[in-house]
Image (cartoon, rainbow, N blue to C red):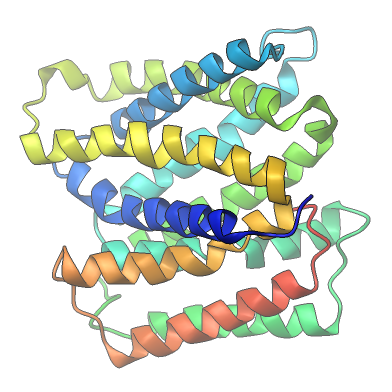
Length: 294
């Protein structure tokens, strides 16, 4: 892997910008679209781009091979469940709050990795980072202006969504030798298979009357925040490696807060700023002591 150049840093910033902007678009899309349908459209566009990428690079897609079960399970844990939970949670909380809560994924991932992997044990500095991350989240929950009895459970649902990302990441380690593009494409195909009947049976999207604003946000989520963003992620992974790519975790909540304040006119309190600083520093300590597998 080469040392990061200016173009690599710019791509990382662009990826953080895209993923940070996805949260206010999820909130706008949720005004008209139910969570299963919202998740399905996101995955559909990503799936189309990934399949095209596999054909272009002549990468074999193993979604329906004799060893299909791991791809199906990862598709549920790493895509289907978190996409749906994030859509549910973000619909009732501030978009920037969802971005901050989702940024805790490396922290929950480190805890799971300690128990389910051999090479990612929690040591002193990493434990300090995990404690700081949780303290930041707890401090955030003490802000009754942002999190109260009306949206408390939706904030927890968002955190649960980030935890499923971590679970999916642990499971992905079992098939990482199958190639990043193949694994991502195969799991995305299975996620699409699960989401389609859920959307049709429980939400019947054809009977809804979505607004233009929600539809544009949904298209942005599918084409840009999922499809294009994953392609950029693949490029960064291939050129700079996983450790460099994971630095995007610092950028997502910062951009999320920026867009939430300036575009959605969401209230930002002093507790939010302090919590954000604590969580980001906690993530830094966790990542500083990771070997990059998760």
